[in-house]
Image 1: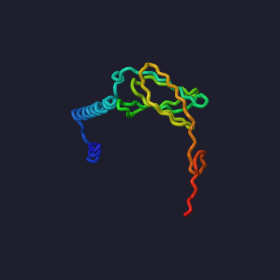
Image 2: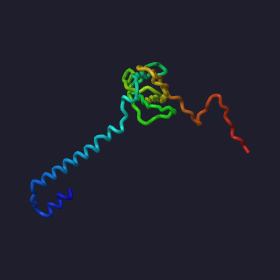
Image 3: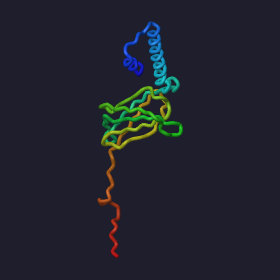
Image 4: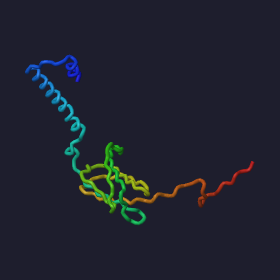
Length: 165
């Protein structure tokens, strides 16, 4: 950019064939170097699927605990778990359909942490060992429990009376 600006200030310049060829080659080399520097970067950060070993197909069914009806639009979140039992980075989120079902194939064998979130239900979470080519997992979501308030009277509790000095 500077070179072109500088040329415009000095006025018209005569360019012979050799100068023109050099400018074209410099541009070609610059484009080639840029492409070689940018293209390998995304591939370097990814793991190869072949190195991960066997994969499984997981099918989830999310139901209400009290009546067994399906829960639609529930979020099923899956995270891999390492050998120490800690959740690894990355993960997948699926949404259930109207029948409370969702599924995914290509899940590598090993520990998997599954969380299910749906409005109006308690959050579910558990670890599963993926060790079969096809696994069906049925999860029953519970309604939220009542909240405890210090301002309400609770059965079975003895109310303390204020001590007078």
